[in-house]
Image (cartoon, rainbow, N blue to C red; front, side, top):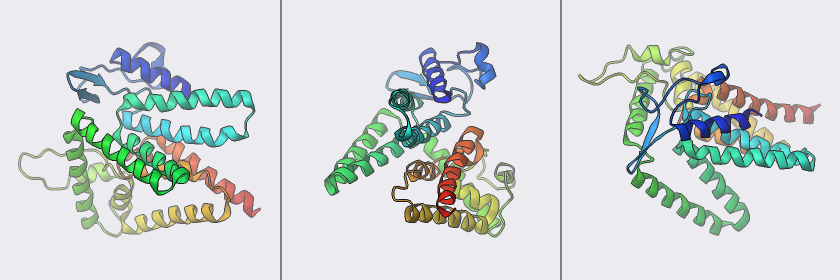
Length: 282
């Protein structure tokens, strides 16, 4: 149900080039349009598009949520009746199509890598070659039409430098959970350079900055341990198909550790994996 109405809100905002307003405020929709300062938009040739938010904090977090929830639907529908499978298929198709107007290149990349994996399972090395050629072609076309914005890339590089400075200054225990943004205020910058106060767009650097290298090691050990256990103990560790995109998208954005809807979904995926292992152990 949540994915269904989120898709409708997303397309409504995209076509209207602004928020829909009214009672949707109660679901968390913000009030915005193309003229709102700082709003996410994209220029493709002569056309300016609003990147829809639905009820999320950013189009990227919306795209990540839709992608991972789609994978969970794919896993769940195998155990459902025929009629419910049809309903799930409708929601899955709607969710995948709704990722398109978010213009989230990280979500696009995750989908392409998943397709390469499917091609590999079906056609072997030839499938991988086809997938890589497709990936290169889409990447070149994205640069040509302006989907990969130079400003976005430079902002990410700036935040990565900030994170590395904080890790160097506080290598063991970090600056504390939730303190990445205030900690940036103490950094020095070249004259005329503004401080871009956002979390670093990489969950691994964010963990290392806030909890130190000790926290990063603990985090990675837990992730690797869970993955190894799922592969070893499940004949078909399908939950990994939802976990891998979270880990991949975490290389390019921070929302899995900072924004509520995505944090809940990530916790659900991890919880489902632990639950399956627990049932096998009992």
